[in-house]
Image 1 (tube, rainbow, N blue to C red):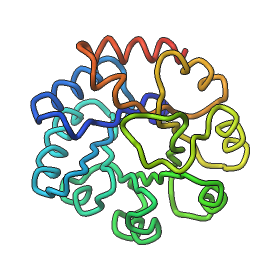
Image 2 (image 1 turned 60 degrees about the horizontal axis):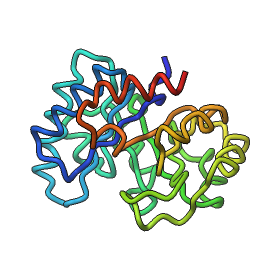
Image 3 (image 1 turned 45 degrees about the vertical axis):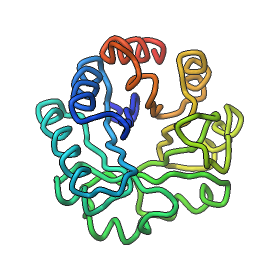
Image 4 (image 1 turned 90 degrees about the horizontal axis):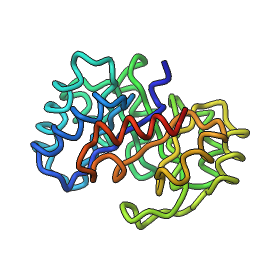
Length: 204
């Protein structure tokens, strides 16, 4: 079972009830991993939202990943952490979370990609594959060509993120990428369960 295949990243603009609904439905539809992302800096609210998602995932075998915040991940005993380039160093995070947790890292440049295999991480979030309205400060748009090149340069599993939707999924899957991370295509639809099923269908 590939945990990275259909990777849901939550929308921090959605209220707690909406978040819970989206996660529950998306997991019922086949999402394989869930990352709780909060950019507001309210740690108490972040912990509350992470805890709520953890309870939904408790019986499912779907890993809970916390974006950026090692302290929040430890507070709720999440399955792992996903770090950005301006967050805690991967080596420090690994010491804090231990060897049995999942550690992901966003990679935005060729230099970062070249360094990745020497870091104590489990997977790469390659950002951004395509331009996306949810992330405006991206350094690189890798595209299909950049993704193929990245796959040949690292031993680590790669999760593509950024601008991924049903029109480009078949091309992305053809590259052999290990997983695709989506926000809007699951969070911003009426029926997240159906959306997840449809996306998995496209992935084959």
